[in-house]
Length: 121
Image 1: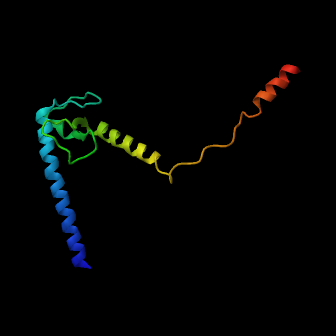
Image 2 (image 1 turned 45 degrees about the vertical axis):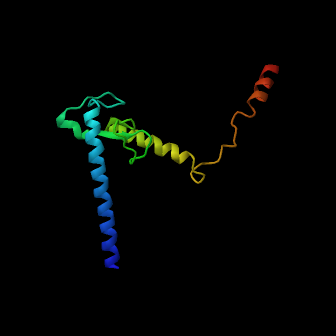
Image 3 (image 1 turned 30 degrees about the vertical axis):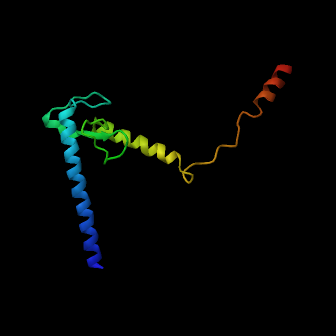
């Protein structure tokens, strides 16, 4: 079992390293191409807080990194998180398991009849 765990740990470690290398490449390129401004809230960044500026892939594919940066936008960490939470919310709405049934109770069903009876009184 430990050999299998070690092998799995090695695979995960290698995948993380590859992702970090890939990210470092496109992040450095995006920071050269674009002004250091969040594309949503327009917050500006300098060297001391640049770690809060992240690259967002517009089409959601982190492997789609064209050299012209057409699939990227720079977002502050807060706007980037918000952008991904919107996508998660939209994805959750399509789940059949997570959707609740429509309400069947109508609290105003008798309102029209009640108002008409008031008019007659």
